[in-house]
Image 1 (cartoon, rainbow, N blue to C red):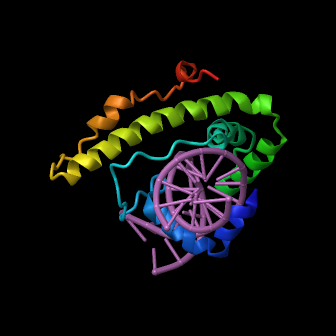
Image 2: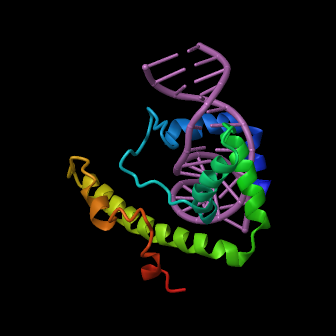
Length: 145
DNA sequence: GACATGATTGTTGAC
DNA sequence: GTCAACAATCATGTC
Protein backbone atom coordinates (compact mmCIF):
# COMPACT_ATOMS: atom_id res chain seq x y z
CA UNK A 1 0.00 0.00 0.00
CA UNK A 2 1.98 2.83 1.26
CA UNK A 3 5.21 1.17 0.35
CA UNK A 4 5.85 3.22 -2.70
CA UNK A 5 4.34 6.23 -1.16
CA UNK A 6 6.54 5.82 1.83
CA UNK A 7 9.56 6.05 -0.33
CA UNK A 8 8.16 9.08 -1.92
CA UNK A 9 7.29 10.43 1.46
CA UNK A 10 10.94 10.50 2.28
CA UNK A 11 11.14 13.49 0.10
CA UNK A 12 7.48 14.07 0.14
CA UNK A 13 7.67 17.79 -0.12
CA UNK A 14 10.30 17.64 -2.73
CA UNK A 15 8.28 15.13 -4.65
CA UNK A 16 5.18 17.19 -4.37
CA UNK A 17 7.02 20.24 -5.36
CA UNK A 18 7.95 18.49 -8.51
CA UNK A 19 4.67 16.75 -8.86
CA UNK A 20 2.53 19.79 -8.44
CA UNK A 21 4.95 21.86 -10.32
CA UNK A 22 5.01 19.43 -13.14
CA UNK A 23 1.41 20.09 -13.75
CA UNK A 24 -0.91 18.42 -11.40
CA UNK A 25 -4.48 19.42 -11.75
CA UNK A 26 -5.20 23.05 -12.09
CA UNK A 27 -1.84 24.23 -10.95
CA UNK A 28 -0.75 23.47 -14.39
CA UNK A 29 2.50 24.50 -13.98
CA UNK A 30 4.53 26.82 -15.39
CA UNK A 31 6.94 24.20 -16.30
CA UNK A 32 4.85 21.63 -17.96
CA UNK A 33 7.31 19.78 -20.09
CA UNK A 34 4.71 18.45 -22.47
CA UNK A 35 1.53 20.46 -22.36
CA UNK A 36 0.22 18.44 -25.25
CA UNK A 37 0.87 15.20 -23.53
CA UNK A 38 -2.37 13.49 -22.55
CA UNK A 39 -2.99 13.39 -18.86
CA UNK A 40 -2.93 10.10 -17.13
CA UNK A 41 -6.22 8.37 -16.81
CA UNK A 42 -7.75 8.21 -13.36
CA UNK A 43 -7.33 4.91 -11.65
CA UNK A 44 -10.32 3.06 -10.29
CA UNK A 45 -9.65 4.69 -6.98
CA UNK A 46 -9.73 8.13 -8.51
CA UNK A 47 -12.94 7.37 -10.36
CA UNK A 48 -14.37 6.35 -7.04
CA UNK A 49 -13.00 9.50 -5.49
CA UNK A 50 -14.93 11.66 -7.92
CA UNK A 51 -18.17 10.34 -6.56
CA UNK A 52 -16.93 10.00 -3.04
CA UNK A 53 -15.96 13.65 -2.90
CA UNK A 54 -19.50 14.70 -3.70
CA UNK A 55 -20.91 12.33 -1.15
CA UNK A 56 -18.34 13.40 1.41
CA UNK A 57 -19.15 17.05 0.83
CA UNK A 58 -22.81 16.40 1.32
CA UNK A 59 -22.24 14.56 4.54
CA UNK A 60 -19.48 16.91 5.62
CA UNK A 61 -20.34 20.31 4.21
CA UNK A 62 -18.14 21.95 6.77
CA UNK A 63 -15.14 19.95 5.83
CA UNK A 64 -12.71 21.92 3.73
CA UNK A 65 -9.76 19.65 3.81
CA UNK A 66 -9.14 17.66 0.70
CA UNK A 67 -6.75 15.60 2.74
CA UNK A 68 -9.62 14.46 4.90
CA UNK A 69 -11.54 13.44 1.83
CA UNK A 70 -8.59 11.52 0.51
CA UNK A 71 -8.09 9.75 3.79
CA UNK A 72 -11.76 8.89 4.12
CA UNK A 73 -11.84 7.72 0.53
CA UNK A 74 -8.87 5.50 1.13
CA UNK A 75 -10.45 3.87 4.13
CA UNK A 76 -13.70 3.45 2.30
CA UNK A 77 -11.92 2.01 -0.70
CA UNK A 78 -10.21 -0.59 1.40
CA UNK A 79 -13.47 -1.57 3.00
CA UNK A 80 -15.12 -2.05 -0.34
CA UNK A 81 -15.39 -5.45 -1.95
CA UNK A 82 -14.20 -6.24 -5.43
CA UNK A 83 -17.80 -6.32 -6.56
CA UNK A 84 -18.31 -2.80 -5.29
CA UNK A 85 -15.14 -1.64 -6.94
CA UNK A 86 -16.04 -3.35 -10.20
CA UNK A 87 -17.96 -0.45 -11.78
CA UNK A 88 -15.15 1.95 -10.95
CA UNK A 89 -12.57 -0.42 -12.33
CA UNK A 90 -14.59 -0.75 -15.50
CA UNK A 91 -14.73 2.99 -15.94
CA UNK A 92 -11.06 3.27 -15.22
CA UNK A 93 -10.32 0.73 -17.90
CA UNK A 94 -12.37 2.71 -20.33
CA UNK A 95 -10.31 5.76 -19.49
CA UNK A 96 -7.20 3.73 -20.01
CA UNK A 97 -8.29 2.80 -23.47
CA UNK A 98 -8.82 6.41 -24.31
CA UNK A 99 -5.49 7.24 -22.81
CA UNK A 100 -3.82 4.58 -24.91
CA UNK A 101 -5.31 6.08 -28.03
CA UNK A 102 -4.33 9.53 -26.96
CA UNK A 103 -0.81 8.37 -26.28
CA UNK A 104 -0.58 6.80 -29.69
CA UNK A 105 -1.62 10.04 -31.29
CA UNK A 106 0.73 11.95 -29.04
CA UNK A 107 3.66 9.70 -29.86
CA UNK A 108 2.80 9.95 -33.49
CA UNK A 109 2.89 13.69 -33.27
CA UNK A 110 6.24 13.48 -31.57
CA UNK A 111 7.55 11.30 -34.35
CA UNK A 112 6.28 13.69 -36.94
CA UNK A 113 7.68 16.61 -35.06
CA UNK A 114 10.97 14.82 -34.84
CA UNK A 115 11.02 14.74 -38.59
CA UNK A 116 10.91 18.45 -38.64
CA UNK A 117 7.20 18.73 -38.95
CA UNK A 118 6.13 21.36 -36.55
CA UNK A 119 2.55 20.83 -35.74
CA UNK A 120 0.95 23.93 -34.41
CA UNK A 121 0.32 22.08 -31.22
CA UNK A 122 -3.26 21.59 -32.11
CA UNK A 123 -4.86 18.96 -30.03
CA UNK A 124 -6.70 17.67 -32.98
CA UNK A 125 -5.03 14.34 -32.66
CA UNK A 126 -6.29 13.94 -29.20
CA UNK A 127 -9.66 15.27 -30.13
CA UNK A 128 -9.89 12.81 -32.92
CA UNK A 129 -9.18 9.79 -30.86
CA UNK A 130 -10.77 11.12 -27.79
CA UNK A 131 -14.38 11.94 -28.13
CA UNK A 132 -14.63 13.68 -24.82
CA UNK A 133 -16.60 10.91 -23.33
CA UNK A 134 -16.90 12.45 -19.97
CA UNK A 135 -19.96 10.55 -18.94
CA UNK A 136 -18.20 7.29 -19.48
CA UNK A 137 -21.37 5.56 -20.34
CA UNK A 138 -19.95 3.70 -23.23
CA UNK A 139 -17.16 2.13 -21.35
CA UNK A 140 -18.67 -1.25 -21.96
CA UNK A 141 -17.92 -0.73 -25.57
CA UNK A 142 -14.29 -1.34 -24.88
CA UNK A 143 -14.77 -3.19 -21.72
CA UNK A 144 -15.21 -6.66 -22.95
CA UNK A 145 -14.00 -8.31 -19.83
C1' DG B 1 -2.41 37.39 -7.24
C1' DA B 2 -0.37 33.04 -7.88
C1' DC B 3 1.32 28.96 -6.35
C1' DA B 4 2.27 25.11 -2.69
C1' DT B 5 0.23 22.12 0.58
C1' DG B 6 -2.54 18.62 2.76
C1' DA B 7 -4.08 12.91 1.81
C1' DT B 8 -5.40 9.04 -0.66
C1' DT B 9 -4.51 4.70 -4.17
C1' DG B 10 -3.56 3.07 -8.60
C1' DT B 11 -1.36 3.13 -12.82
C1' DT B 12 1.82 4.30 -15.99
C1' DG B 13 6.33 5.29 -17.76
C1' DA B 14 11.07 5.15 -17.30
C1' DC B 15 15.23 2.94 -16.08
C1' DG C 1 11.61 -5.87 -11.78
C1' DT C 2 11.63 -1.65 -9.21
C1' DC C 3 10.82 2.99 -8.38
C1' DA C 4 9.26 7.64 -9.02
C1' DA C 5 5.95 10.58 -10.80
C1' DC C 6 1.40 11.88 -11.62
C1' DA C 7 -3.66 11.72 -11.90
C1' DA C 8 -8.23 15.09 -8.96
C1' DT C 9 -9.72 18.09 -5.50
C1' DC C 10 -9.96 22.96 -3.11
C1' DA C 11 -9.70 25.88 1.06
C1' DT C 12 -5.97 27.85 3.14
C1' DG C 13 -1.46 29.65 3.87
C1' DT C 14 2.57 31.79 2.26
C1' DC C 15 5.22 34.85 -0.43
